[in-house]
Image (cartoon, rainbow, N blue to C red; front, side, top):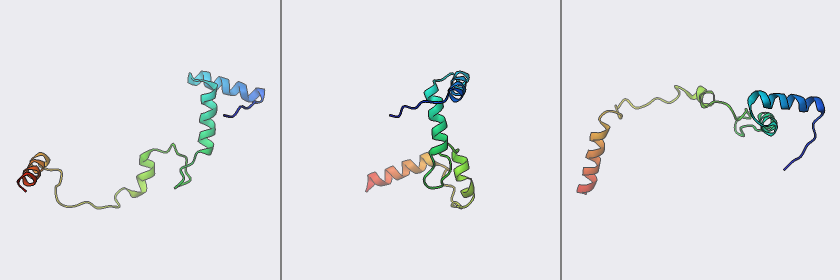
Amino acid sequence: MLTMTLPDDLELRVRAEAERRGTTTEAVVLDCVRSQLVKDVRTEEPAKRKLYDRLQKYIGVVSGSSEPISENCGERFTDGLMEDRQK
């Protein structure tokens, strides 16, 4: 655990931001520190990026099968169970 003393002007800003957010001063400071220091190890980008942003460059890269795998799922599952049972 770290204890730190903030200059008066910075403390006032932190308190005002905490009041605006409806949270504690500790939460505001932690959020600020995390946003500056916590990075995604693989990309060195902020860890708070959305999943879409992380995967955007891969969209459309992999082509799927032409077989309609999602059709008749229940029937195919039942058929598979019956085959396993007969074995």
